[in-house]
Amino acid sequence: MITSISKELYKVRIPDYTGEIKMLPFNLETLAEIPEMFKALVIKMIEALPSKKGIAYLTMDGKLVEEGKTQRRGGVHIDGNFIQDVSEWGGGHGGNGWKVGEGGRILSSEHHKLSYENKTGGMLIASTYPACKGWNGMFEGTPYVGGDCTRIKGLDEGFVLKPNTVYYGNSQFLHESLPIAKTTHRIVARITLPMDYPVIN
Image (cartoon, rainbow, N blue to C red; front, side):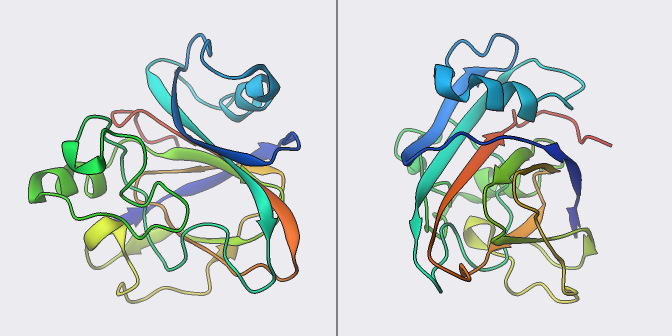
């Protein structure tokens, strides 16, 4: 059973950016590792967190996306939890769907369960252009390799995430990148929460 939970939070200003930062670890309490140009963004994104403790990970992805292309991972999936030190992930940074366009890597059954069946963890996400769809609810089935949920049945039309708006999603938040309606420079900001972070109500 997949329990997909998300919550629309508030508007945010995303600074203009071209490039990619992949899973930059940072202390939620001090933000010492966050580059200055993203500090105001991160402060706003984590504003709704009831507890600001532990190590989270910042991903920034800004690029020109061509009409009809997806910027990030297509197909319904969950991100699950990021496990920093799993050797199968090439040292922790990237892999398992965390890199742009990747479908996820094969994990051991133990690590798959820890990443995709764990009810804690989650993310905060925002983008400058609406090209991500999400679903809330309980759905029969389990995530496949890399968090793939394209075989899950019973999905309705879902909802499109609004631009320049922060959303919270739990570790089993079902979502997918959508093809861009017109060629545009799009920026995605995601904060991956610690894997033991409790679900936000």
